[in-house]
Image (cartoon, rainbow over all chains, first blue to last red; front, side, top):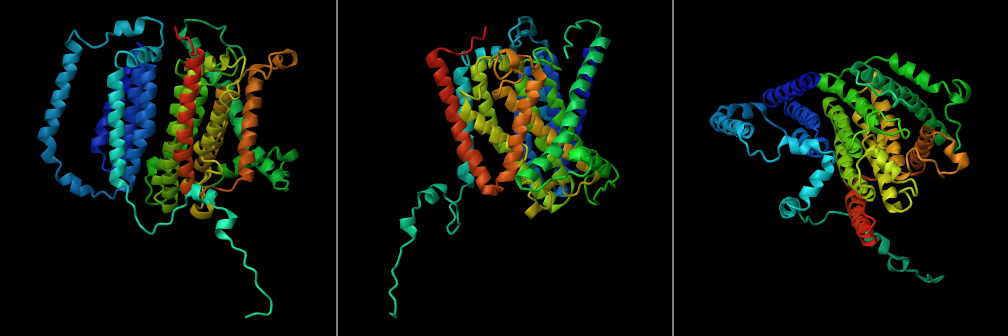
Length: 196
Length: 341
């Protein structure tokens, strides 16, 4: 009884946060609600017994991704009325995507070939960190490595897009500084007396 | 201290026992925080050949209470143009996060509030959430000083979390479990501070950056940003930030003790040492780490921001990655990889 009570509490918070994300006027508030939604989905994972996934969700999404979101949203100068103007245009495509996701969820619930059945994952006593590790690094190692490579390519791409070599910028180069010797920079000149 | 003998299915009793455990942990923790502020002022005073606060009570022992009373009696100010709700939530968030993390820290072989499988990940997650208190405070204040402080802090904490993550992974490689009790148990013969000494140093410096302490206290940098993200705060909301910051320092020291200094394990497992109970050992180790925190603050100048980023990304990240691979290679080569099943 208590478990289902908590489930409905967390789900209610997630759904209401999700509504607030798209309905709140201030984009920073939207991101904060998004973070709350992430956090509560972590709580749902804990209730499923998937504590590793829950912690990863919090560390990766809340601890890193959402911080950068917040960072960007705070720095941007967003014109709210401009965003609101074109909002109706996106109703058809938005509702189409929503419908597809909804159908997918119904298929998942009713279908028999759900990837991992709940019984398998929860009955034995091996911690699910070990279970995930045992599957991810053996059966799915290539897929795992490829996804890592894709992320690497994305990162390199983002850096090349933003890296500019501007002339005339003074930078501290630690190696140069440490490699400097007294003889390179100071020359001792003997000044003779009484000569001009 | 041993409360595990009460094993029952009565859910009300379980809740009561948990509440009791929480009180047993939190009350001494808050006292510890209060006296840490005094210790900081006294120790830094002595290091700078001053006396520090020594007037209120003997050795200034009543100074924290005087400070608390002073802060309580001040007026709470909500700046105009600030985002009120976020402004009020931010200090609470900082304080709460610094408290909830203590639920997984083991104080002795049997005494831990919540003995979960993924304890170290939980600690990592909670400490990475700490940045929100700062960002929210900086943004909600609607002040340029506070905002700049918050931006600095966010970038700094995200950067140093990466190397903390690698350090944690290399400790986990030696243990084979994410449970904090198991991590301590694995150090019974040798504390990880010895074989993983470079990682210990990297971790300690990263915790300095993660808690925004000197020499990485740029978010507060009083010479350029007045007080950074807490410029606009007064009264109790300021006190909550203050308590949260010091509780975070203690938490990070506890993490260092658990990961590298053997947690509640005695220095040597022989007669005079193992009479001292585990919680006392943990407290001694935490105090040692905290002393180094204060020592660093009294002796080092503040880093420049580009130097801070360089240290995080160009020195610590490659170094900890290298040492992680080295540790893994060594464990595989000598056949010492932890047995999981």
